Length: 78
Image 1 (tube, helix red, strand yellow):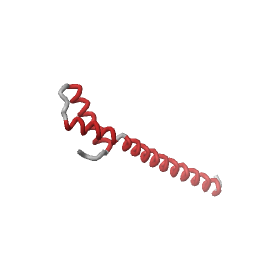
Image 2 (cartoon, helix red, strand yellow):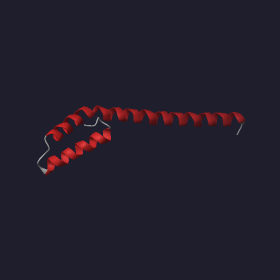
Image 3 (cartoon, helix red, strand yellow):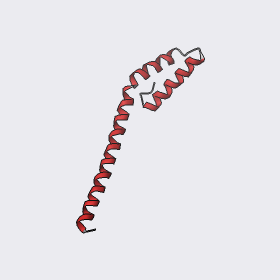
Image 4 (cartoon, helix red, strand yellow):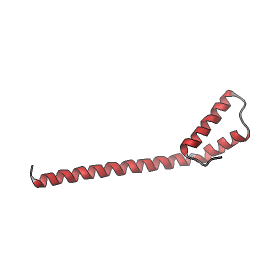
């Protein structure tokens, strides 16, 4: 392969790496924003369950799941 061929090959590899990294960074940012959009409803429901704790087992499971979502999404703490 000629010197020009190697230059083209390296340029293509660099472009592919830059494209992959920027795509992953963009996807991660969009995913975080999407999770933050759910914070309003998750916080409202979690606060309601904290003010008046559920009596049934199903209610306790839901309250635990909402508290977990609140932590996972990074929503404001109670």
